[in-house]
Structure formats: C-alpha cells, structure tokens
Image (cartoon, rainbow, N blue to C red):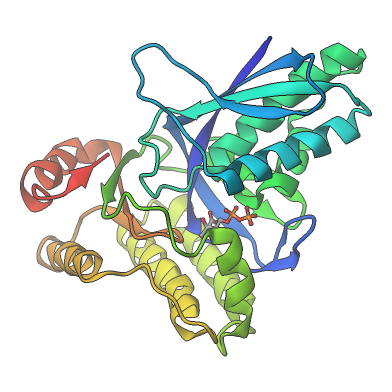
Length: 313
Ligand code: DP6
C-alpha cells in the first residue's frame, strides 16, 4: 500500500481562463499561499479486479467522506493518465479523504489531485521499477488533472506561469488562515466550468493584462512588506474574477447577500482601523481571511465578535 498527503492553497492572483484546456495551461500567471492545515490524504493499493475504483479513506475519529460521481470519475481519469505515463495496465484501488469538512464548498481539488499525483507516482514507480519523478515533474503531471493543484507542491508561496511553478521566499511566510463558511452546498458552477464560461465576458480579453498588473503590485507589496497595498490588490483581484462571472453570456454569482454583508463589514473595519486581514474568494461563496502572524489577537477578535454568527474554519 502507498500513502501520500498534500495541502490546499489559496490564490491571491487567480487562475481563471485557460490557454489550453487539455493540458490546463493558464491564460495568466497566478500566485498562491499554501494552506498547510487543510490536507487531502490518498492511499493506493493493487487490485485484483478488472477496473480501477475509488473508495473513501477511513481515518479513525474522522467523519464519513464521500465524493460525487463526477468527482470520482475525474479522480479515476487522472489515475488512468498517471498509469499511462508509467505504462502500467494493472488495476488499482484508490482511497482518499480530506481533513476539512466534506461539502463545505471549499475548493479541494488542488489538495486532492496533488495528493493523488504524489501517491500514484510512489506506487507506480515502485510497481514498474522506474525512478521517482522530481517535484517539478510531479507538479506538471498534477496540473493536467486540476490546474491549481500544481501550486500545492510548493510552499509557502507558489508562483505558476504557463508550465512552470516555483516556490517563492517572500515576507509573510506564516499567515493565519480562516474561512468563513457561507454555504455547505455543492457549488452550482464548478471552477472547471467557470474557466469555460468566463471567455464570453467582454472583460475577458484584457483579463491577462489586469492579472499581470495585479501580480506585479502583489509581489512588490510582498517584497516591501506593504500590507495595506497587498489588501487592496488582493481585493481588486478576486472582485475582477467575480466580475467576469457576472458579465459572461450565462452570468452566475457566488456573492450572496450574506457574503456582501460580511465583505462590507470587513471593508468598514479596514477603513476605521487602517489594518485588518487580507480577504479573498475563490469560485465559491466562502470568504478566506489571511492574518499576519502578529495579528493573532485580531484573528481571535474577528472570530469571537465580528463574525460570531458565522461558521468559521
Ligand atoms: C477560482 O484548478 O479548480 O480556484 O484546472 O479546471 O481543475 P481546473 O480548475 P481549478 O481552478 C481553480 C480556480 C480558482 C482560482 C485559483 O485557484 O487560482
């Protein structure tokens, strides 16, 4: 049996839109912070059956884990791709789970595809007697399963452009991460579908230019430890992506009244205090907050007072 784990990541500069949807080549560079506490676990075992199959991985003390049929199919397709890379035709049982609540609407494809790629590579290199692949090779393989998973191989910051991903040593390497859970329902539009839908927005053509500008500002702010500049650009960036969702031919939105209310509260906190957490949202309704390591008290204050009526992870 083989076992691997991988962390999730949250993008400050978003991957939205693909140059090549088969290989998951992004339309613009993205930058993420790796979330070491949100983990996916994968176990692989040889099977005597005549198909590969997925099962939930049971972890003592953890609740039951499930994956939709669609998610299981995507997972097994990536396993099949990994088998073809290693030219292996036998069958495998793959088991997986996450240590964060199932169905919480958190993007878990990054951590689960990174863990699957690592585990399949461990298993297949041993079974076929081939050399272990390098981290860069694994990240590239993982990218073809789910784009954002390639960033989960690097820490604390990961910069992904085209087919290259690297870790960056930047300031703020020890952030405190909280998620405000707005909805636990399955998302109506998956991020993979969002990548396809946004191309019809009139704002899509200039999106790579805006993303690159935002990336430059973000990196400058990270190098120069300029927290309020960082807060502003990170906010502008997620809103830019959500604006693509709202302006495409079949518009959709994850920003509910509740989300809007919380975003307004946080913006007001920043206006009054001149400080606060970074705020971002992925292709989902939940709000991610990132506090500096010297803001632990503020993080507690948010959890206990400002956000006391909401589920926080
Ligand atoms: C909004 O990596 O989930 O979270 O490559 O189709 O699997 P696929 O898409 P995915 O897209 C993530 C989009 C995002 C922003 C980001 O993480 O950069």
